[in-house]
Image (cartoon, rainbow over all chains, first blue to last red; front, side, top):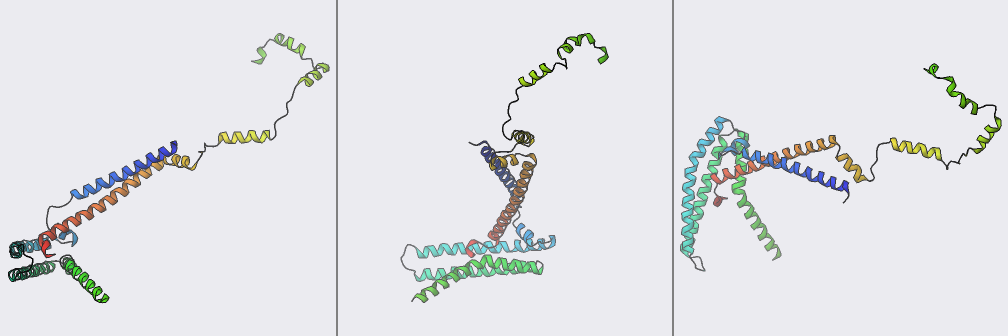
Length: 162
Length: 116
């Protein structure tokens, strides 16, 4: 093989190794700085002061037991729904009732969650609070809206073809 | 220094180099062979001198590029640039990953999957 080509290929390999090495080392170093605090994202993303952070932490710690309680209720209701559905091929009145109760519990939990987001957003500076609330609504309710939107779009197409 | 030489030592040469010997001089001139020079001899000589003095040129662009890559200044600059680019990009991607992970962890705490 041509000597110059070997030199250039070697230089290219060395350059790739230098780039990849510095990339992975710095990325790893960055990942090692990750905090173990559950609320560190709030502090970094919304630039909260220590006082604001203390207030948000207090609200968070007050909300978590309520959230855990609702999660336990939902999990229990889901088990009841599974039992009511059993191995049957149709939805019984009992299963229908359990599904309605499950939906109500989820709605109740969701309302409680949104209320928590509103309260937390009020503990932040106004601009950051609005941004936090918008972000939380997007990631919690946004997926439902996307599914509903896609379903209505799909239904619209169906009607259009008929 | 020249005054130190013995004049007698030069005598035999002076005897043979008699400037008055015209016949001998003519014979010597006739016997001297002067070969004809090849065409553009002088130009070729100068060109060869110039080529010898000029820096060595590589045969192809690949050789020229290899020679450029092997220059220390170029090599150090390239390594430094690649390291800086790698560190910047790695830090940026690392920070993005950290942010994403922390956001996911917060959401997992306050908004269970069943509600999303």
